[in-house]
Image (cartoon, rainbow, N blue to C red; front, top):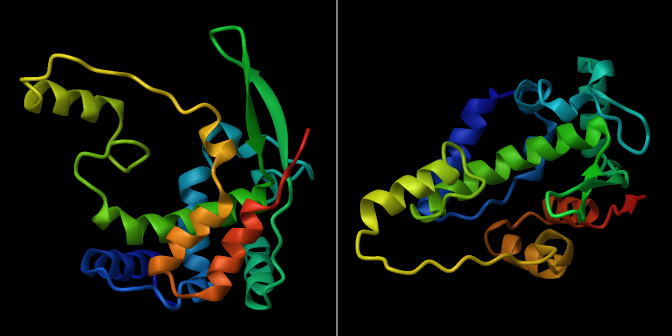
Length: 197
C-alpha cells in the first residue's frame, strides 16, 4: 500500500490540474489513510463522546481498521445514525449537534482527507472558511491589508445551512469531478444516515 501522504499528493496534483477522480473509492482500502485520520482526530474532545451505538476511540485498533476496510471492499459499510443533542447558544436558543459513532468519525475523516486533498488546490485564495491554515484570523488579516477602500460590511447567516442543503445537489456537484459511482454511493449513504434524538 502507498503511504497516506503519497496518495494525498497524487490527489492534490489531480485537483490542481482539474483532472477527474476515477478510483477514489479504492483509496478507502488503504490502512495508512485510516492511521493518518486517527492521528488527526483521536485527541479531539469528541473522540471519547459516544455516538448512538456507544462506540468511542477507546476501542481503536488495527483490527477495527481492518474490519472497516473489509466492509468497504465488499461495499457493506453502513454509516449509523448520529446521536443528536441540543447545545445551548449564547442567545438562549439551542442548536443541534450530531455525535457519530467512532467508526463513522474515522471513516468520515478519511473521506474528508481525500476530498480536501483533491478540492483544496481549486479553491479561491479569498476563501477562508473550514480550510487548512485558514480561518477567521486570516480573513481579518486579508481585510486589514487588502480591503483599504471598503466602507460597508454586511453580515449574513444562513439559518440551518447544513440541515437544509439538498443532498442531490451536493452529490451532483461532487459527480462533476468524481467519476467513481462506488464513492458517490457511499457519500449518498452517509448523507442519508439520519439521526437519533
